[in-house]
Amino acid sequence: MNQSLIEEITSGLKSVTPSISPKFFYDDIGSHLFEAITFLEEYYPTRVEKSIMKMHESQIASAVGTCDVLLDLGAGNCAKASELFNSINPKEYLALDISKDFLELAIVDLKKRFPHIQMSAQVCDLAQPLSFPDLAGKKKTFFYPGSSIGNFTPDQVSIFFENIASICNGSGGFLIGVDLVKDSDVLQRAYDDSLGITAAFNLNVLKHVNRIIGSDFDVLDWEHYAVFNQEQSRIEMHLRAKRDLVVTWPSHSQSQSINFKAGEMIHTENSYKYTKASFSDLLIKAGFDDVRVWTDPQELFMVCYAKA
Ligand SMILES: C[S@@+](CC[C@H](N)C(=O)[O-])C[C@H]1O[C@@H](n2cnc3c(N)ncnc32)[C@H](O)[C@@H]1O
Image (cartoon, rainbow, N blue to C red; front, side, top):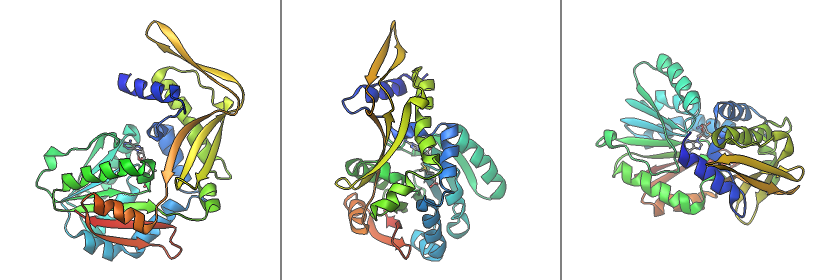
C-alpha cells in the first residue's frame, strides 16, 4: 500500500480537528455512489450544469475556439466532456481522475462512441502540481465540471489556477463549472438527501480508509452530518460518532489508536460556494483573461470560460 497515502490519512485523523480528504470518497463504490447522487432530485448541480452547457453550447464552443487537447479534470464517468465533443471537436481527449477502475471503464466505452478522437486516461491527484510535458505546443482546453473546484480552499484555488494558466502558456483556456451561493436550505438538501445516498457516499469513505490503512472503522458507529457554514461560504460534510469508541490501525511494530467521544466528528468535505464576481476575480488574479460566464435563469450554478 502507498505509504504517502497512509501518512496523509493518519495525520488527518490525528489532527486537532480530525479530517479525511474528500479524494478518499472515490473508490469504485464511491464513484458509483456519486453517480447515483447526480440523479437525485435534490442534487441540482449536475442537472443545472448540463442544462447551462446545452443552452449555451454554441457560445461556449465559439469562446473555446479550436482545441488540440481537451483535458478533463476529475473526469468521473466522462459524460459531461462527451457532450462537448461534437461542438468543441477536440483532436485529443485526456481524462484525469483519482478513481482508476471507474475512469478506465468510462474511457473504453467512450472510445467506441468517438473513434475519431484520440483518447487516453491518466490516474492523478489534482492536489499535486500538474505537468504535461508531452502536450507542449498543443492548444489545451482544461475542463473542470461538477463544481469540484469547491473542494479546494480559495488559497488552494489560486495556486491551482496559476498552475493551469502556466501550463496553457498563453493559448487555450479553462472551462469550469462552479456552484453559486444560494439559499442554505437548497444547499443543505443537496448534501443531505432524503434517500440517504449522500450519507452512504460519506460513510463509504471509512471503508476505503480501512482498506488503505488497515483501520477498524465500523460505519454503523457513524452518521452523516452536512451543514452550510455561512461565514466560510461552504457546505461542510462530517461523520459524527454515535457513541464513545476507539479506532485502531497497525503501524510498524505496534498499533495506533484514536478515541472518539459520542458526537465528535471527522471533517470529510468542504464545498465552497462562490458569487460570479468572486470567482471571476480568482481567475483574473491567476493570469486568465476575458472571463465569460453563463448561468441558469435562477442563477443556481455557473459555467465560466477563461482564456489563458
Ligand atoms: C464531484 S465528482 C465530478 C465528476 C464529473 N466530472 C462530473 O462533473 O460529474 C469529482 C470527481 O473528481 C475525482 N477526484 C476527486 N478528488 C480528486 C483528486 N484529488 N484528484 C483527481 N481526481 C479527483 C473523483 O474521482 C470524481 O470522479
